[in-house]
Amino acid sequence: RAAGTGFRYKKLTADPKGLLSVAVKAADGLGKLNVKAKAAEVPAIGLPLGAPVVVHFQSEHACWQARYSTPKLNTPDTYKGLADLLP
Image (tube, rainbow, N blue to C red):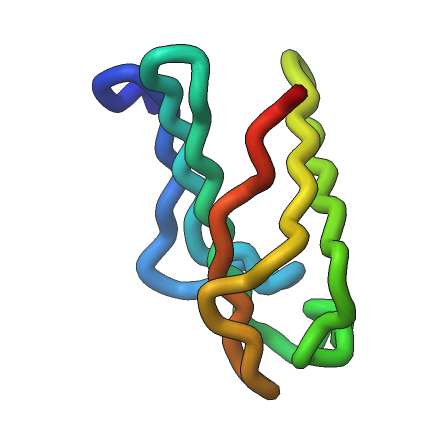
């Protein structure tokens, strides 16, 4: 559903593939993407991650990509970071 300057998808319980929520927000040429998933079928990505991390997110209508050179948090169960600014 539309939410402010973006879109939001949220379930109280995970779908069979493990997706719990997706939030996409745009502001002043910048964007924010937050994805949460938890289930046996969610592929393990081997946290902590090596740098740089490149993330691709694709929907039926759009595609986003971001590069993360220096994470804010990179532990065995969580990765958080701010994407590099585009040149």
